[in-house]
Image (tube, rainbow, N blue to C red; front, top):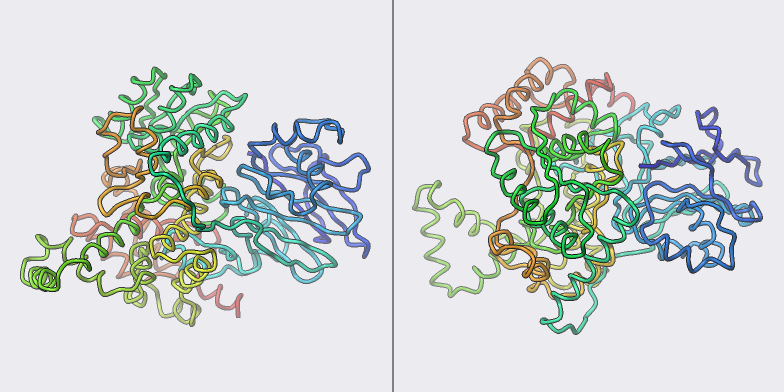
Length: 601
């Protein structure tokens, strides 16, 4: 995947020979460059507008057709399309782009630099601005290589990652580096940067006939798939779940099959592998089972090197294996990432629907359920106990507890006193409060819509960026993560998106004639490796000595989590993976928490 780098008056910066360099009216040096691979910077005929773009604009061919005749289009670079679109529409040109991209454009006449991230945040765009100079890149390591930007890392951002498995915009793990949010642009003029949203998911009232939804969804997903396959030799990351199976079924129906389908298998007789093989056989596509035990330290280091910070959950291991195999065989790797967030039915959404049903019961029935939950042994009444407890919570707290790997009451037991002192009053959960407020401003009146908004705005960008980091060196495309599909789905009543027991009702309805009923009804499955495939490495990665060396986590708490996880008493997969990533990243940084306190103080 291409990257971009923009620097204004940041001193000596290593850039390729194809970079464009100039200066603004105040004499500040300005550099725009394509990175990995280096390409010529797109420009207009008058040499007054210059642009670089990371990722892809999937509707560039259609936009190019509309520009022909009024502009000279000399290359096939998507950035050139943006340049001429900007000449006609100004900063609003980004609204016409459909894809996964980060773009930087310099307008010499207006002395304005435009930065923009795609509508769903599939490609990141990081920046640093100190009042007189600016640097921006689609790669965190590219900015981290600049002087003064990594002198202090942000412990609060690391806590947020451990809590949610992600660091939401505008924060990053570096105090001096920020990131644009999904659908956000930045305008840098006269040495100052201001940001604004150019696209936001909304919840308008739309009168749609329920019977028309399967056809409309199918048409939109098929169009999104075609845009991402056009003119490229594609492969497909195939799991046994609905999302990847839906892409394969639609490609087969459209007679545009991927060249190969890849499935990561971590053990013989893997159920996920068997289901994927059946999907491939049904579609008539060559199926490749990528079976291997990952070199976990190397896999972690590769992920951290690609992204520059802790990112992703354990499922990235499967993508890393498949992408490594596919890298020399296909131009593009398709994946079903984003289906759950876009079409609805995530665990928090279904938990909300279960609470709604419970609250609708007669009072006597609810009292009986509460009594049963108190008297029956925990193992036999766990689901009911969770339901009774959730009924007392508001939607915000219910969602927070559903997506948190570490709960507020567990905070002091996990982090050392030194870490807690550095964190101060910072709380990761404040992010969710702001997110729910944004959802209300976007027209969400139902708690289910608010949760849907949060999943798309918080979880989807993080999953997409993690997937791209895991597939580094390969063009990864996510047909289901399309902002037009997301907006259409948000216009459908929440009850049609998912129920208390069923997920992705819209996608299931659209694929009813193309996939077997068992696949449509199957619960969500993750391609993550089983516990036995990585538990031995975990014991080595989280030894008491390694935990104590950086002073971020309490050693005794991590030891307890490992014991409970190893014995099967509790599943701590998500939090242990996050702790392992943070631990390894801190080791690579070479800074204990005390150094961070001094640097940020």
